[in-house]
Length: 391
Image 1 (cartoon, rainbow, N blue to C red):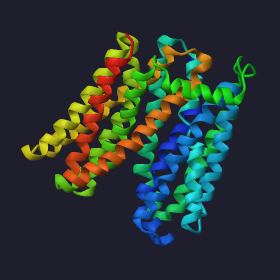
Image 2 (cartoon, helix red, strand yellow; image 1 turned 45 degrees about the horizontal axis):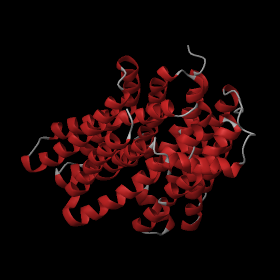
Image 3 (cartoon, rainbow, N blue to C red; image 1 turned 135 degrees about the vertical axis):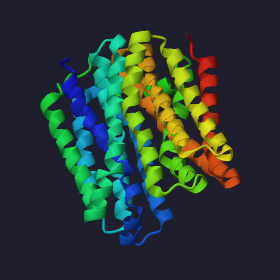
């Protein structure tokens, strides 16, 4: 076994936690709103504090990874995650839950960057795509955790038990990191000031050599959240007339491909090469799946066809993991934390923008228009990638 495997698995437990805790409110909306005496719209506003805090914290986390190393940053974030979970579990009011969402957003801002940075510094460039795919795939299993086990726990013991369970997962991850991850402070840590490091994060974000990749990142993660997490359910239930359980089964199959797909994409690029071609082809194929899904509505596609298209979308959009491999090839290992932080700003910032645009499109043209927003964005991102990214 590769010696990096165990510590990388320990670090990726944080990514599992992040995916679980940020999707927990979606399976507990009814009891959360009832117990805290708030509306669904208020809960949506409260949970939006999570990605906002996430984005704000990304720059200091990126600086910390390059300045102090992965292990101390990961342990600090896990401690904050335990605090945020406990705060949410005991929240007596909407204001306390809002504070908990902010704390959890800060904690989760580096949950994927920590294992990615550790891999970027510990494995050869030729193997990075595979390891990055394993990190993303294992981390995405948190969405399965929140879809079934946590939903059952909320049903049986209430939403507070769900947050306590997430806190227990954070504690387990914290212990695993403490026991398995070696602390290696980067050599450049003392050569520049913290403020200079922070400016360098923004320099990566605006770098001409990275702007094509950043354009693709801007639309990539937003498509996943929009199709799988926001509009997929309304499409299947409201437009195709499926029941909640039937629609849930199809979305679960899509989620399974989001778990397995990144590892396959990393393996494939390791065998075939052609990193940019696979990255571009995956995003264009994902856009085609969304367009076919929408066209299948008026054409009367059967449920199994919608399921296949959602699985196809999950499998092809999973090639977004190659954004990390391409970024790794364009920066030095000691710059990985800041560069990954810059890319994550585009991943999550783009998701916020596209979700807003899809809502406006839905108001004008319904769920189909919302879904087509993401297909159009993927095509536009690919066009900018072709124009700006050097071969």
